[in-house]
Length: 168
Image (cartoon, rainbow, N blue to C red; front, side, top):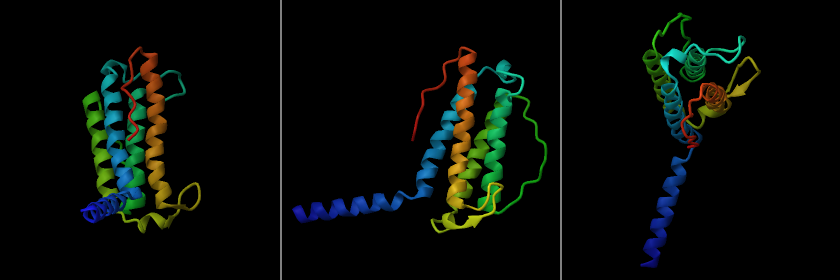
């Protein structure tokens, strides 16, 4: 009986380890990141989407669209090997901005799901020099986090309590 339990524990732990790849870890975090940012976008009233703390900063809406555009660019350019046409799309309403953001998060996840652990070792040309696709994957999340942190300040400056942080 002890031998069976031991084998079961080994089997389950090896399966769990096999699932814990940089890609699967990224995708889990990515989904939570999307939910967190959407909560933040929903918390800001639509009439405050043009708010910016100083003249040189982006508006709340511009920050969200900058995050969206960066997701589209990084995931398509470095993982789908596609170039996006530089078409200026406008999103006049809060609901349209949020929907566009969700779509970009989902499209990025779909693209990243096709990557293999070997793909992450590949070197690509980046404006900051050669980087691995793993570094680009990390940049995808880091960029969202960077701008989401700014949006927390925007919410606080408008007396709006930001959503509770979630790490994973």
